Structure formats: C-alpha cells, structure tokens
Length: 135
Length: 162
Image (cartoon, rainbow over all chains, first blue to last red; front, side, top):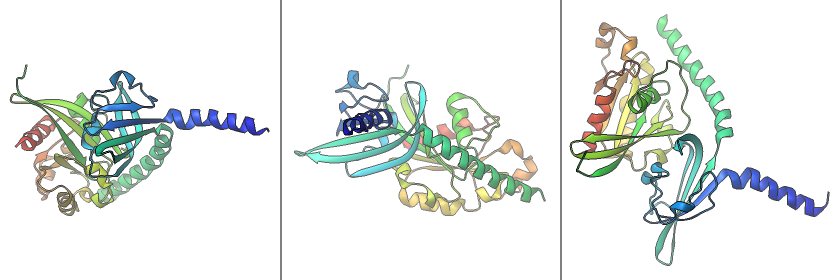
C-alpha cells in the first residue's frame, strides 16, 4: 500500500476514533467558553458564556490551584442524553491569566465492557453475603 | 416565586456497593424506583433544584460508585463537596461495620462538611429487626417506599447553607 494511502487511512481513523470521541474546551478562569473543537456538542453559540449551564458538574471541578485533574468515568446529562465521559482538566497560566483546558472523552464502549464485569462481581458478593446471613 | 439567592451545592453519596445510593438519588430526583440492581461505575451526576426559604439551591448530586472502603475512591470525586450522605444497607452488616472508619477518613479530606448517616432499605426489615441494629444513623430510609428521601436531602441542604 502506498504511503499516501496510509496517511489517508490514518486521518480517517483519527477523525472517526479520536477526534469525534473527544470534546476539548478552552475556558477562562471564570469558566467562560473561549474555544472548542465542538465535537459531541456544538459550543460555538455559547462562546463568551459560562460552561456551567452546559456541563454543571464542572462548577465543582475547576480549581486553578490544581494543575491536572482526572475523573476516569463520569456519567452526566448532555442535551437530555446521559453520556459516559472520561474527564481531564488542566489549568495553566499564560501572560498572568489562568486558563482551563477541559477534555471530555466519550467512553460509552469502555463503560459497557466494565459494567458487565463489575455487575457480575457485585452481584456475586451480595448473593454470598445474603446466603451467609440466612444460615 | 422566590426572591432570594440562587446557590450551587455539591452533595456526594458514598458507601458500599449495593446499598441503594443510586436508588435514593433516583427517587429524590425522578420519583422513580426499580428493584433491579444496576451497579454504578465511576460517578453518576444528577441535578435537582431545591427551595429553601427564599433561596434556590442547585443540588449537584454525585452518586459515587460503591466501594468496600472509602480509601479506594478516587479523591478527585470529593473535590468541592459541600455535603456528604453516607448510605448503608440495614440488611447487610458488612455495609456498616466500617462506617465510622470511612467517615473519619472522608472528614479528614473534607473538614467541616456536614454529613448524614443513612440506614437504607428499611422496607426489608421488621421494626424489631431494625431496633436490634445498634449503629447510629440520622435517617432510616427506603428508596422503594420513598421513606425519608426528601427529608434527608432537605436536612442536608439546610445544613450546607448554615
């Protein structure tokens, strides 16, 4: 296969599996939306406005004194649909101003796999406990 | 219509898995209950607006996946919390045996944050069985019958405003 085809394949795969799965947002210190890649949801109409009406859970997570924060699995509503995210927040300074860079990765596929394993484990533990209590 | 302030408060629900944290949240936010047990992964976030006097309080409810010990919970989940609900299952002693150690651990991370101890699944036990359980709790609850569900969230909301 020619190198140009690999590049084309890579770019398509990147678009489908990486770019489309990550919403990235640049916020001011006051949680104002400055810029976004607008995947998962289009934030462009909200530029200059607070991120909190869109993602209320960020209100308790944006901390300028914490350079990096990660929540591996977070389920929250977006446009009345529950979505499973991995959330990474980085805070940094540029020319004496503080900014936040928020990365929200859609991890629905990962969630389904983990859910099955965890559900089986928890059900087994609870059943065992109940069986012992009934003796 | 209220004329007061609008505030935002973060409440976390913690405790062992299968104790009913998600069911309590679901009953409080959506007035729904299901007998089916569905494990929570990570954290599930819901929102409900509560009126306290003239003020509106946006409660951000963080239903954190149950763990046998709170030391195993990612501390990022606790960040910015204003109130804590520790839930245990009255029918499973393993869910309240380590409650005080768990609470001590969380209070070190979140000093001065009000905390409620909630004894859930009261519908599964008789009054006599409940009377024989000696662990302390603030509310006896049932997500199934909605017993004390509104009351516990309202009490915590008021405590967070003080």
